[in-house]
Image 1 (cartoon, rainbow, N blue to C red):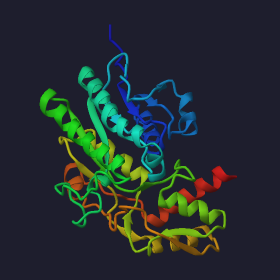
Image 2 (image 1 turned 180 degrees about the vertical axis):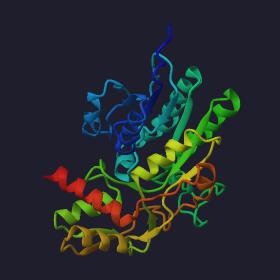
Image 3 (image 1 turned 90 degrees about the horizontal axis):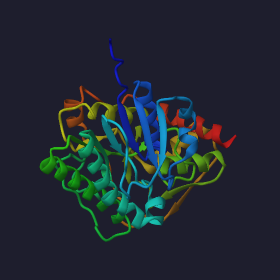
Length: 318
């Protein structure tokens, strides 16, 4: 008698969020059983609604800051639960720190119990307002631990430390990916991050809000490229951290002008004071990712990715 091979299970915390839902979609496409864990603090049921037609998808509505219980074997856990945009983590500072500390602890405990790989979504915010450019993984950062952004920055820095502590003490197989600015379909129109802000304002014919002089830079990675990076990272022989982002750098004025061009809007730019501790430059060095992740690098250019994202925003506004 030949036994049917058991479908391998992937747990994705924050699976109803922007990036988490794309991860769910990717692993369902790979034939995995996917368990999405989300308390919908910032996630959206709309992001995962299409997956309910798939018998390999299931949802557990749960706050991972409390102990997690999963039945059966688990291959990998992707810890993506956390508010990620400044308005969200400034509105929920304690919950942000709890999901980065208690949530990471509970997720690592589950990985240890299940002998599963733990893939932790960290962030370029661990570099703070960097004094090294572009940012490399060996740079320790320049972070204000008591500033308003510190609740997110330090939660992620603690998460990295705890993740590697579990690896060293309990030999849990862990991977840390540091996410640089990522965009694409399923972002919220009023997310608070610059690309959805600009697109939402442009489509409404409103002025685009630029903070400071608009000379601060960011690099923007399309979500499909980021998901591919995490997919490869989950199989790589490394603990990380590994930078995952697009090394092409844009200042905010140029980005605003590109959004106006692609939307066909007649919007002007308005300038407001720069937020506290807002980084002046942010750009990843991805040499390590290229070397460890089979030559991974972003494939989708900003113009192409923005066009797809704009069409998504037009659709949800219709």
